[in-house]
Every structure is written in C-alpha cells, then in structure tokens.
Image (cartoon, rainbow, N blue to C red):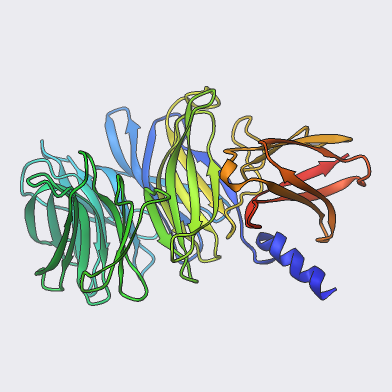
Length: 448
C-alpha cells in the first residue's frame, strides 16, 4: 500500500499538492499585447502590456484569479507595460512607457492600489525616445529603469533622481543582494554585442562584461541574481546562457536550449520559456517550456499553443511549485477572435496542463495526442516533436490507483498503435519515457 501511494504522488502531483492548472485566452474584441506576468501574495496573477482603444494604444493592468478567470482590467495613459511589482500594502507599481502630453516616448511609473486604481504617475522628461524595457525595485525602495538608449533611477514616491543616456538597448535589469543592480543588453557604439553591467548601491559601475557575437542582432536578453549571489544571463546567438560570480568571474557558458525568459525553482533548477517554430502544416509558432538542472541538463520540455503564431514573453515559478507563462495568442488560423489576445498558461510542477478549452483545441496539453480518445478497442498515440536522438521510447499505461496496466516497448516513430481490448472501461494515464528512462510526456486516456 505504501508503494502505491508513492506512485500516485509521482503520477498525479497536481491532485495531491493542490496545483491548479489552466490555459486561457483573454482579451475581448480589441487587440492585446502583453509582456509580463507576476503572482501576488494571494496566489492571483497580474499581467500588463498595451491594448487598443478607439483613441489609440493604452497601458493596461489585468488581474487573473488563481483559477484563470479575469477579475478586472484597468487602463492608463501609456503603453508597453514591461514590469509589475507588488508592494507591502497590496498595491502595485507598473514600469512602462509614456507618450501622454509629450511627443516623445518616456519612462513611466504607475502606482496603483490593490484594485488597480491610480495613486500616482511619474515619468522622466529627458527628451527623445526613451522606451522602457525593464524596471526593478532596489533595496531601500528606489526604482531602477532601463530601456532604449536610457537608464534612470527614481525614489519610492516616483521622483526621478537621474536619467542617463546610453547608446544601445538595455533589455533587462535585476536588483542584487548587496543593494546594487545588474543590467544586460547591447551597445551600438562598439562591436561587443553582448553586455552585462554590475553597479553598486551608489550607481557606480563595478564591472562590465563584453562579448563579440559573429553577426548582428545578438545580445543578452534576461538577467537574474541567484541565491548564491551569482549572476545568470540568457541571450540569443552563440551565448545563450552564462553564469558569473558576484565579482564578474565566468562560471560557465551553455549553448543548448534557447530561452526568451527564465526563472529559478526552490531546488536550484531553471525553467526557460522560448518560442518554437513548427513547420506544420500549417506553419505556426508555440510556447516552449523547458526545465533544466543547475548544469543545464534538460529534464523535460513541453509545448503550448494553437495553429497560429503565439509569442512567448514571460515565465514565473509559482508559490505552489508550478509555472505560469504569458505572451500573445495570435489567431491566424481563425479560431475565435482574430485580434491578438492575452495568452496565459498555468502548469503543475511537471509542466502539465490537465486540459484546454480554447476554441476547438480541447485536448491534453502534454506533447502527446491520442486518437480516438475516448476509445474502445484501439487508440493511436502521436508524439509531437518526435526526437530521434531520444528513441526508442517506452509507454506505460496506469490506472487511477497507480497500478501498471500495460507497457509498450521500442517505440521508434512518432505514431504507435495501442491495443485496449483487454482493458476495463475507465480513466487511465499514459506515461512516455525516452531511452534514458526520463519522463518525456503524459496524457489521459478514456476507455469506453
């Protein structure tokens, strides 16, 4: 009995650990482009970006419940909401860009209460086009911002202390334990495409790392300080992932497994979100979610999306151990609303979503498909994004008590027929492992 309980915990962690999963497209009849997501202290989610209005594009903040339902959406004069921070009183600060009352783009801070109603707004007035790409809160309560050709600092009340020009793009920033901060991007004045800057609490530059890429358009995209005070960055091109000590010494470089955003887990693993192009037909792009260990060894990968061109932007580790990601649902295939919408996916700790109810995409979001499902005598298993290097695969079918019912060995193609003639009616879980025994995908099967 004890072994059975352990097996059930392994197969169905979301049921026993209370990990809610969902996949939602939210937005209505106007275009929404969202860039960031965060979880608040109540387990709900906040997303921000910009949306269309009859008078132009506007910054918005949307609150989504822990079950994936839209609770409210507020609109502000601005656009490109890139960062959301929850404060101790339950309110929020949004880092965005503003064109309100000025012909130029400017850094914008919007301070709201817990319901998203504005308490104050603040923006810099250096002039020129200063689109904000990132904002972080420093120790002491100040806000650091960076973006297109500018970086700035404001106090806790939104009063800007300084704004400086920069020749290039600064894509991301993060506060550090020593009260300083780190910034990544590229510099347009030199050949060093990849740039990482470390500043102390007095805004003095401590060190900078510069790397030359083989072509144009290469730069560091995201940065985060880890629990041991090391600095982890991801980028495009050849330098996809790098880790540095607090003093700037290189601790490793990893090329495999790209990412547009990343976060850490409580046990030292890393979760990455990327955009995966799929040849089709039809040609489309999906979210690609990947979990690796601290040495960048892939533990699992999952894909999410529809037949259109989904664009991934942000991923976070949730308090329940699962993951939440967001981006744009671009419905080029004509399912539902043709305007780009807010796409939010909440998974369990294994990267699974139990089901989806988006348009006619009502199937398991696990990288596997079964047809027919429900089934009577046979069902065909289709492995999405079949990887020959991980073959042969092995499939195991378990009942809801965790008992092994059937094993299929030596799966060497992306399709495999399953015989169900000797299986009783009911609900089952199909687990697919690769040739190393690593969990690859899973899906529920209904026998009628």
